[in-house]
Image (cartoon, rainbow, N blue to C red):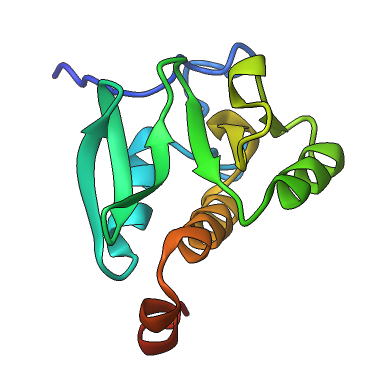
Length: 140
């Protein structure tokens, strides 16, 4: 049986039988996880952005798959919040000159698990959702 797996290339340290979440290796986030989690958030839709999947709340982009494989663009509440997060988590988050002065970070999906991905997507959603939507549709 042929199985096709989409997403970033396999981790070089993994053996042929090692799977994320099997107790041998920690589970890592995938683009499929991004889609599933983002679309579970209130009033979220998926629409292409710069040729890749983008996730919007009330037509405001809060996350999108980056052109670089295994990378996610996430909105933050402010540039100051972005800078603090980048300083605290440099192994997981980074930026490029293109995003200087803009409240977005780039996330290495292979560096986080599903729980942390859910938290970061929820924070991005909250940064872009209206006050009214946040009040009427609080996140769990």
